[in-house]
Image 1 (spheres, helix red, strand yellow):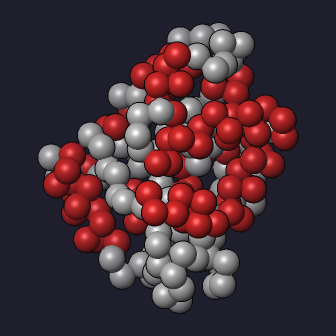
Image 2: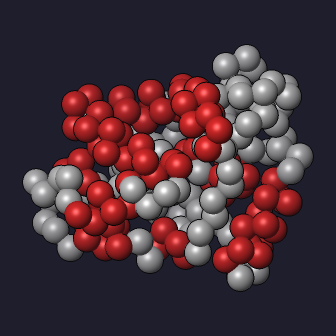
Length: 176
């Protein structure tokens, strides 16, 4: 797995999502986040699983992967094609499966087509670096998740560039 200063390309999801901004990933990795346990409990409740099972290190990591990501049809599709790790590697991009995902009404899913095009243009390593910078609090620098309307470290409203892009559509989506 290709390494970056942000930890590795395993946070570049198969579909074009940046796993490093996933609410679940951030709740497990932000050691100073005061609401981490409450976030994990809420996800566990929605997924109807014990909180211990609410863990994911990124869909291409060697560590634990959430049940939602492990069962992902896009991930299965990529794995079934020789030489394809991500949608960015696939000659069939953009396919119906990815288009459906991008248009399923979940706000952060809407970025996958743009993300995959960017990955193809600049490469996975550089894209991960860009996403890492984009999904940080613009004031204190802590990494934030897709739906962070307030920085958990400094309390800044709309601290991340992703929240300002998504605007009023901010709402937590934890789907099983």
